[in-house]
Image 1 (cartoon, rainbow, N blue to C red):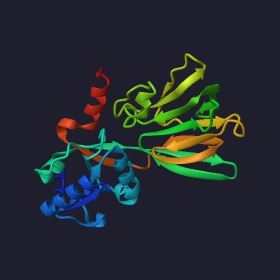
Image 2: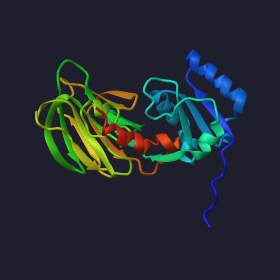
Image 3: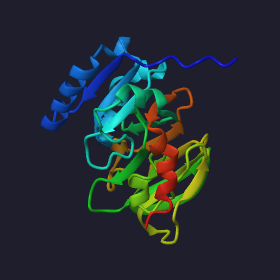
Image 4: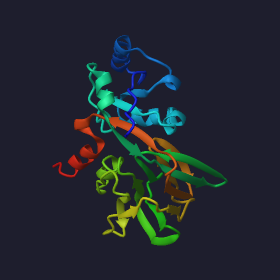
Length: 262
């Protein structure tokens, strides 16, 4: 007989510093109480998508151990969030549908240093100056594009495929599809290249062909490294994060809806 899921009662509210959001947090705490993250059954993140990414980074250790996050939108887009409401919160989070997210792990090399960051939406590589970037792209150790001349390129997860990737005319990817989107940003040469769908276990390497004349920056969500010469990206399958969504606004349904938007 399957084990009945434990009811989530202990809540930790985490909010942005904006006045409207902080006052909402105080009102929710008065209604439902508040506890430390180490004692919580769930974290409630109050803000926008950017704040959700900050919350995942801040509480990464606990979230990796299985602590779920339920977002309520107090920002602009709120794709990773649920609708804000103070009513029936305990019922909502206990009926919510979990979505498991595996982030990308970026290793960015500069002259003399290596930086590692996680990205839940995408890893983006950009030109730092007026001159277009010259990038060599390899997949699983094999060069697939000798020279991409563009503003840059990005590798997006399914959860992030509706964000910057979609704005760069990349494909929307359903959750569970097992693929990542490799998308150019304003490609000049090859002009007809529109990107590629890659197996989620693929390793993507982007190399700056002229780091002195054409410097690049690499950004994992909102963590930027400048003057990078080589960027390696793989999915971190050892890190599983659980985001909770209301049953009628599940993340897979949001992603599917984006594919039919006009």
